[in-house]
Length: 244
Image (cartoon, rainbow, N blue to C red; front, side, top):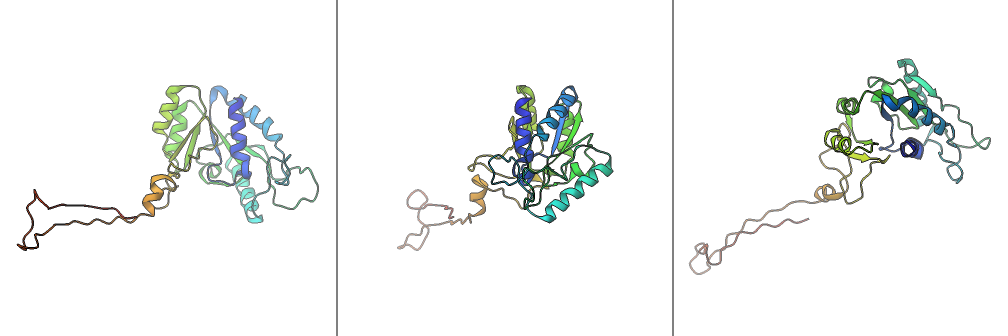
């Protein structure tokens, strides 16, 4: 649980939630749901918001007034849809008065269902939507039914659940006991379904293929004296090359 809470904070509130692999939807099995909510709210309330250049501040502002307005709009949509706003970050307390920037504090919704706008859309801000599931199959079903498929993480000590999640989670990138499932630069980076534009991912072999033009040459050697193709068992050769 300690590792889970720590990684949720880093993933959901790091960069004020403004990155493509920031956690937004959290599916929690019912056996630990209440404990998780209690621990998450306690930790979220202790997140400091303010000047990102201050080493004592955990979370800085969002990028623009338009981004702040969008995040506030989705918080309103979550309330209208029937989710419980367990922690409201629309008016965060700042350590210093009159700080410049567009600040949104940690925001937590509970009792969220997959059909709500806050669960379907990428808010791109420090807003967490927590959903209760009966078991791992409920979480996997939510992932399969979502139109996006960038990344998903599982926190478990069970090897069977780990393998099951890796094999069945319908996303491009998987994390196990990590909050941000970004692979190393030499591995492909990118999602699937609505999270992929084009046919190639970035990084790794896909990136090399994207910038490579394949060229094939088929060659038959000819005997210059006879003007006929040389015997296949002598000088004839067929070669192909790939030029990048």
